[in-house]
Length: 466
Image (tube, rainbow, N blue to C red; front, side, top):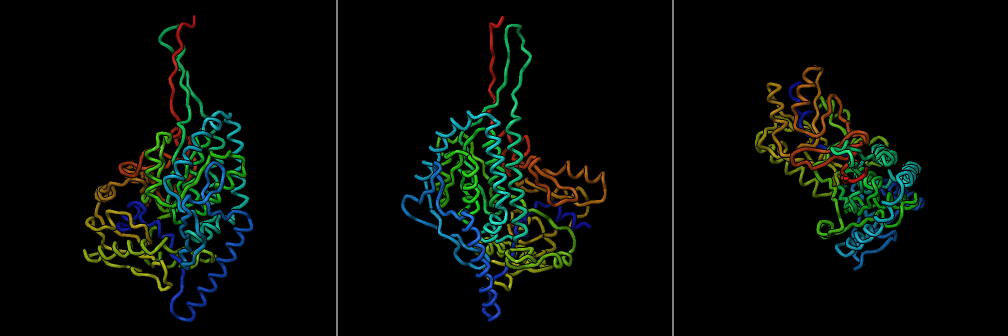
């Protein structure tokens, strides 16, 4: 009970615990498995291509464009190492043009009525849902998560577009009682302008819709920089946005040279807001229970196979990071209770891992592993557990599992996190605010509170009205 509660209260460092799949070994059976997976991937890509959703160029001002210097980057299937596509590798020049496009479009998009913006967003939602399977296939191919999880993410990602399509019509201002009889005091909410949205690889669709949905609903325009590891899902979603009638320039997508793109967004005076999600994003689910339970719950395999519950890590660097954290922990006294090594399937697969006797001087305790690793931290009292959970610069999400109602209130209020799940691991929803405290970011996404991040308040005092 003690260790399970401690694990639940630590932030969900094991996002990748939902990601570990298959690859080939040097045996003949491994070769056959890889060939089988390649055929599946090829069929999946053909289905995406037939739907017109395989885009490899950036989107600037409503046009699909190559990198100006012709450079490309490979997008690989982390389950097989195969190249899925070569996409434009863009930099500062392309980003500057995307910003200029968003800036010029802002003046027309923001002047549309809320109802007009709402209708376009609603149509975008409907198109995402109607292409749910193709988007999920694309996501599994480039990111590695199991197909069933990819399908869930498409629905989840679309829900933000649907929610903010409705909230677009509810951006109300205010009237303040005046201090003088001949004055009227008004508060208006107006869109901030061009938004730069930088998103990670772990949720290739939902991380984008959660940012772009409220921005467009408020009347802002956006420049999206998806992860260079998973740009295909973002490009497909942007294509559907154009089909929905969202005007050219309202959504722009650039990918490639991350430092150059980031600098261009930060240095531009036309970009009025940057929304960024990085490595502190939480996983979908934190499992509580013993190592034996974890072992029975988790099937490692190709994400295109229905029985798979864990896929590959995104690349070799991610596997090396997990190994570094595991080696650090064991060198300082932790013990491997389950897993703890690369999976026999090869490639970027890592075994589901449970580490016992973790202490606060270990990397597993201090930093986010972003792999399929659950560290167990023993504690003696409720106060000790709270102190350990709060002993971090991060503060995005925490979880507590308990049968005690008084304890659930005490601990959830004491935890220094932006989100707290009580007896529940999947807590993110489009109708609730998502965001952290301390070094886990500023502001909130989702819900009515997320709209305020893309709006500016304007106070108007009108005098001499008598």
